[in-house]
Every structure is written in structure tokens, then in C-alpha cells.
Length: 207
Length: 221
Image (cartoon, rainbow over the protein chains, first blue to last red):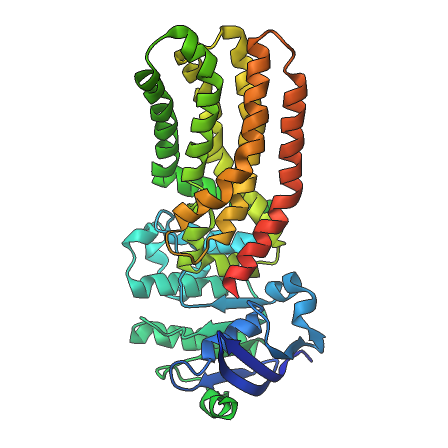
């Protein structure tokens, strides 16, 4: 059984301790919901999970193997959705999704656009998409090429109610297929049986 | 390999659709060279004497122009994080992006250079050497520039910083690029300079993907 864990993680940004001694554990089909006020380190923790940076202390392990040991292997098993949507204005929505699928070894861009209800925007250049539509194109990457671990930083930002439902459905399907999700949200997303990690307490411990 | 070609294809498609970067580089190159006869006067002997140096310096400055955007655009829209996380070595991605940059911004300079050589009154038998030297030298410029493009990520006024970082590193390419053309103009064999230029290009090919990848990782931490 796959297991994604972090032990006694400390994150320092500049001179400031963002959080200290944070641990988490995710198993197949599980979801981890990060909560806490702005600046409590939700995005920082998600970036550490993705391997975009190293913790000041502690380690993150996939099946008991440190993720820093093989970054490309870790990259292959995760999808990361950050603050930027990585949608190029000069490429069409379908080309944008297809590119990220190609980089990961191929996938079906059309079907993934349909999963977020934007199949009709396939030929529309990125520059004509609204913020919510760009976010949906970005989320379509998750479906286009499969990966067992989804790391989603505020994925519901700019989404309308219908798209939030589609995202919840996508996450539910992903988990029922044995996938894991780690995500942060300021509400608006309903993730059943998610383990909650409150970073506000960890930040207090650090200061 | 297919995945790296996907990166090359995307970057080429982006620069073709946006168009302005390649065109701006080319127009700058032509204008910079064309200004010299106005500055030093239209004396054919003087122009022929300084021609190779002028074309090379203009090529150096022109190839700087689009470099700033090499990683910056992806850095700003979050795409660079995804490229770093992609299951291919970052060094390969850097090389793919440099290849696309050279095809879009370096190759056009090489193609138009004989025209500018004629304009600067360079003898016709020197032009093949000029083209060959630029063909070897401009990829080296793109490769060395990629290190600077990685280092300036997140900096304010990155373009200025980039020229300060990278132009001194371009000097060896300039020296041997010009000396190849000068040698040909004096009827001497240009082979030695061209070989050294090739050596610089291969050295840059070996080192710069690693250095630039390290700079990009640093910028994202």
C-alpha cells in the first residue's frame, strides 16, 4: 500500500519560522486538507510536498523513500496546481493541456477539457479565457495524464459553483481509484473524510 | 526525447505566434549595423576594416534581447514550476528551451548576416566565413545567456542585470568570431579561430544546461 508521509517538517522563509514540527500521513484513497490563516504556510507545505524546495528540518517520504533522492520519479507521480495557471495566451486551451500531457508522456486533452465543461473552448486562445476558465484549463491537466498524487493549492479559486462540483467529482473519482489528494482551501470545497491539518497551531509552536 | 521535442515545439510555436521577439531581434540587428556607416562615414575602406567587428557586436547585443524572456514568461505564469516537476531532467528542458530560442532568435541573425556583410563592404569571399562563424558562435551565445536568464529570475529590472551578467561572458565568442573573419579577409586560413569558437560552443553546451538548471531551481525555492 502506497504511503506518502512527512515527519517533523520545519519551514523557514527569510528569517521567519513559518511552521515547525509538522507531520502528515496520506495513504491511497486519502485526502489531506490544510487549513490555517493567510501566511500560516499552507502553500509552503504544499510546495515542499511537491519537491519544489527542501524543508529546513524533517523529511518527506514516498513509500519510505526520501522524495529528494529522485526528483524526476517524484515529479512523475504528482500533479501540482499552484497559484499560476500556466496557460499561455498564444496557445489554444486544447494545446495548453496537450502540451502538459505530452511532457508527462501523453494523454487525452479533449476528454479532460470535457471533464471541466470547457470542451467548447478547445480552440479558444488562452488570452480570451476568463480567470475561471483559465483555472479550469489548468485543472484539466489533472485528468489528461494520470498521477497518483494531486497537490492542489487553493484549487477552487475563481471557480463558479458548477465547476466546484466538477472538481469535487474529479477528486472523488481520483480517490476511489486509489489516488491521494493534498489540498488547501479557504472553504467552498467539500472533501468527504479528509484528514485536516491545522497549520495555525504549528505556526504558534514555532514562534 | 519526444517530451523534450514537445518543449521545443511549444516554445517555437509561442515565438512564431507572438512573432514580436524574433522580429524585434532581427530588426535591432539590422538597425544597429546600419547605424555605423552614418556614424563613421561611408568610406568603403573603413567600413570593410570594421565590418566584421560591427556585425559581431550587433549580433551579440541582438541575441541578448529575447534572452530575458527565456524563463521569465514561464516563471511568471507558474509554468516553470510545472516544467521543474515534469518527469524529465531539468537540464534537458533547459537545452530544449535554448534550442527553441536559438531557432527563433539566433538563426535569423545568421541568415541575414551576409546581407549586412555586403552592406559593410566585406569582400564576397569572406562572407561564407562570417556565416560559418556566426553559425557556430550564436548557439554558444544562447547557451551562455541561458545561465544569466536563470539567474535573473525574480529580480527587478532583470533585463539590465542580464546584460551586466552575460555580456562579459560573451567576450571570448566575440574575440574568436571576429578573428576568424579578419583572418579570412587577409587571405589567411580561418580554421584555427573557427575551431576555438567550436570549442567554446561545445564547452558551453556541456556546462550551461547544468548551471542554468541550478539557477532555475534556486529561483523556485
